[in-house]
Length: 422
Image 1 (tube, rainbow, N blue to C red):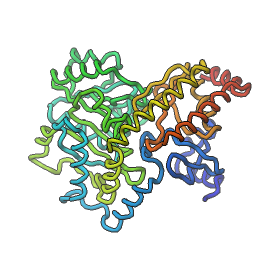
Image 2 (image 1 turned 120 degrees about the vertical axis):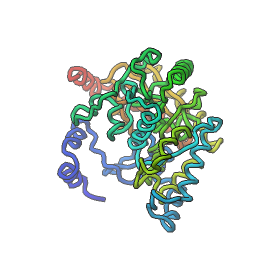
Image 3 (image 1 turned 135 degrees about the vertical axis):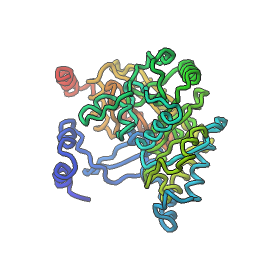
Image 4 (image 1 turned 90 degrees about the vertical axis):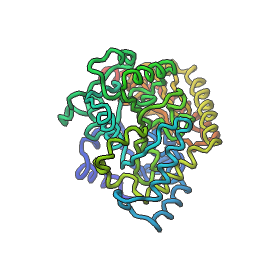
């Protein structure tokens, strides 16, 4: 392994000096080295349980043996392929994505992308093209990628520095969702995460979601759901929107579809949008979208993630995790509440400084997790879906020890310093 000092020095020189300064300031000088299953090790050999999972990239753990075997097999047969031509393996993956929608049979078309931002860009283009309207509405605090249209649907902080704000994009707060009925001009689309992760791992009420779906249908507003972090079994169902008995017009997936091995994302949409491609089937293309060498890995991801027994275990393990966290919170006033659906969880602290200290203490105890970027009092907690019940007990034990650390004199003093700095 490379010497860590040299890596840091060259990281700053060739990649990002501001990022390195941030890592050093926050005490996050972690270089991911050896990795397997739910664990990874840093440059000093310290072990961490990965409860960040890169937003779901490692849903099935690091270097999953079944996925590695499929990739090795694929390398004997495939390369990137040609996105212009008919592809058997790409077609098989599209078919399985459509089948995963279950009774929502209108979701019958798939276009592949290399990443979630690209998949969202297409979703916005489809909505505008079919409705003939330009206005796009998204939820404040959401995140949908850093590409052109996707970043325009995100928060101002991601746009301003690059002069990337575009006309006809606006954001509304969660409490304003019912105001869709009165928005003028009528938007082409409403974009939202099924469970807003960057906004604080928010779990929406079923009645609210169903009311939003009624309004969007009534006004012919395309409902685009971002399932990049909530999909692929993370919620205990193939797709989180299935908990709400609603059918979006379009949804996107990515991150975990890669198996952590080969980048791939997808836009899944209703057949009616296909009319946009009839005059020219090549008005939207993606050179690396649905790369043939990555498709067998993604097919294996779906096979593993959507197995009924696997999905049932996610809910039972989620219950185990929540019960353990609640037991710990009863002894620690800084822990306010738990937000959870399946193994998609957010741990709400009383304030951002308490959350920051918890992250540092968790690192000391071998748990890697981060705060929700737009609600820094919420700790995003996304353990790999393959975590076992015994590993959950180990995770809870480490979490308990971390919370005890936050009570020590050193951490109490750090809390005061952070409060003053904020």
